[in-house]
Image (cartoon, rainbow, N blue to C red; front, side, top):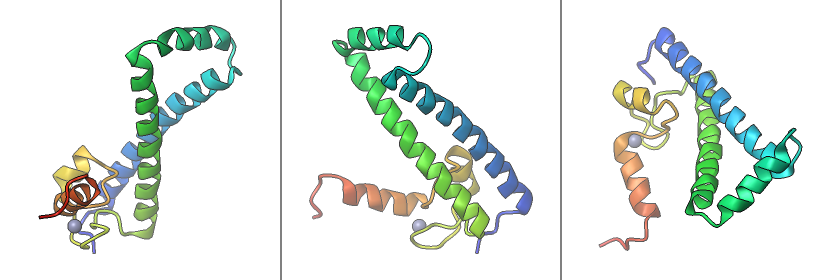
Length: 127
Ligand SMILES: [Zn+2]
């Protein structure tokens, strides 16, 4: 069971909602630019075509994919807040340290479990 206070969880929830709004705006703008529905979108598309030769374009796609992933993680964190399980590691069940939640409000795992998952997902073969 989480040891976080209601006030603290509320503070985190506000931060998550704020961050989601930012990401939504970014993703929405990117979708409009891609589908050409925004006014002046043709210009944006031309700029994107010009940039396609550039390594910046790849970075842009990666940044958007990252933004979409972060938004999903934030949505999952909001679900945990509503279920009352926010702040507990989804893997080992121990409380996630507050300094970690401050740095990453969407963190679902403690640093130890996160490290284990990242190791498992990497291309390294275990021992
Ligand atoms: Zn853990």
